[in-house]
Image (cartoon, rainbow, N blue to C red; front, side, top):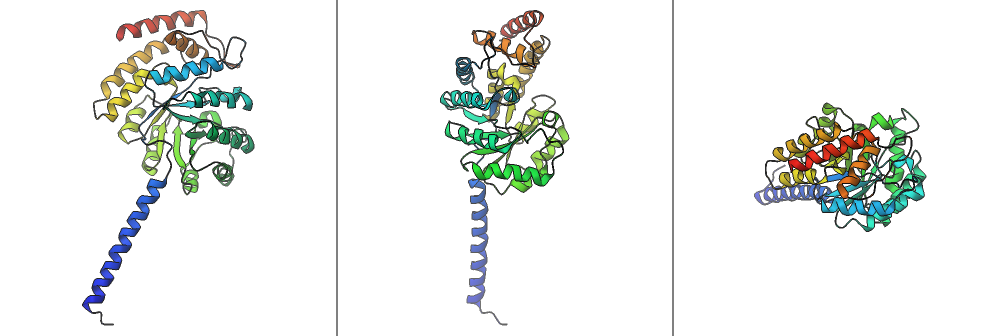
Length: 333
């Protein structure tokens, strides 16, 4: 069929308009995704949860920790994650801790770990977090039943997504060494239609796997939960954030690394200095929650806080080594 010049120009214009509309729609869809923060390359402290000597959760000490993390430059805090010993606390206690964190966020980005082995309690904790200042969630898979079917995990997380407001960013927690239930590419793809799927925390010590996560989901925030082995550098260089347990004791040092990166400066010098300092405390036995809480209390100049069983108190030998390590770190400046 013959097409005149006017019709041809009209067809070209329509095609161009359609392409523009498609591009705008894609851009709008991307902009509509809620990652829970304006920037991705942020540093979250995987916060400890302090208890008093009677093993009661110490809400006053939690408030002091929040103030300390803010003063030291943390971008955000993850409350009641693995380092926060979340399975050791009741639902009521977890709500109390979240309320303290929310009231004392002071501009920091707050992510709550609400995970339980069942969806009613997980949803309950998630909704409570949404009402008390949380910007996002970090949700571990249900961790009693091993090797659950992929469809079952999709259903579990879908129940959560459908129950919480889309203003609350949801991150999946990949820590199969603890949960025995991995987060997979297939699971993320099955949930990607939810606009508040924000990303993951990857605490699995598998660098090739992490590289694949970042490659497959560049639009999400694929936060690393491991700082060493080149993981932090890879995360930063690919525009991703980090949630780090070592951030409890090296808050300012990690904040300096991220600040240098965001300013376009060489972040490797502060990172190398940080790693030298981390080694001093590792040599002092700071690898579990009792020693970590003791070391943090010394840094903050506050009373000692404690962990719940099955973890043990810091030993006298560890205290001596920690004191020595902190003194050496102070000398390094």
